[in-house]
Image (cartoon, rainbow over all chains, first blue to last red; front, side):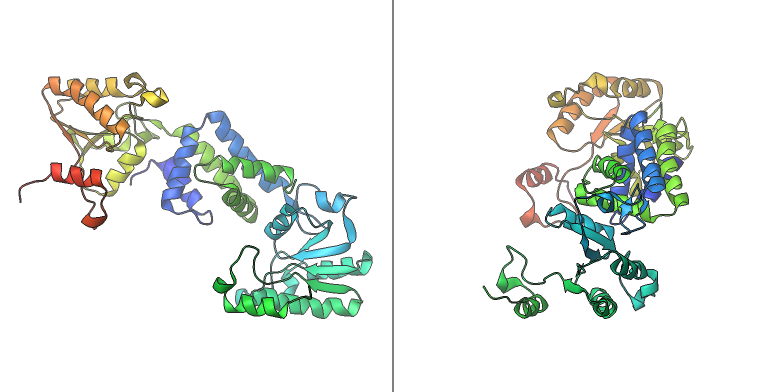
Length: 198
Length: 198
């Protein structure tokens, strides 16, 4: 036993973080000990505060401390377009581009029979309800081209198409700055498939 | 502004950790939100608890929740040998080898004029006092071969030698499993210097 009890406990807690191994956990714990008592209490209350106050927006299911969330409550957002993403982190990535001005819908996951996750565990019913009641004109599926992503897109398209709205999916192809020679086969096939007249 | 207030605050707190950038901080914050409320409170109290309870051992200056620390209090440790290290993490690394059975002394840093750190900011006076009062036979300097490390070793040797005890420094050379061809010049010089009869 190398660590004194409270330190060992803290290292153990940090090791539960994604991508944090024993060495990083130890470094994080030593960082805590090097902080002032005030800063440590600040960190602890930021953790508890985030957990207690941040919930899902009841309309788009994004993380938010208010309901509806900042994006849903904004009147500068186009409510006729809904961009559907799997997770809040995908929404954050799209927001970073500052290009999209519509609203969002977070599915809180993807259909994955392997993980026992079916459509009823996602916020799909709520999405259909929004499309029905909010005069939506276009639903953009910003969902990754993985097995689970493709299955979810198929399922959503099947439900959304009969509602008479435009359903689109974001483009897949060569990343900007990417080299054709080093692109994998599937990406190249998708890029050919998605070709556009110039 | 992409993140709701309490979440942005938490991400900001995590970014202060060593080696944690914006992406990792975001992943850590999302991990917090995915935990149960009980686990989050457990983590927060582990943080506060470690900070409040872990102090420096008054004898060897290692992190400890008790005073003297577990190592100083153990009667299976040889008190006639003191291994001097710069930081608690160095002590941890040595303890992991399970080879050394003596006691330790943590300097809490190295002499570094560049950072304005002089001998009086380290626990050097306490080390000399221990050597004087505890019948110490050998002091092992387990200090890295950096500019600061070498300066600290010179300074300590100057103080310790007149006390009539054996002062040694850990060996530097090729790491086990290391390839001579790829070793840097300084390491090779040190390895030659430290050669031993076989």
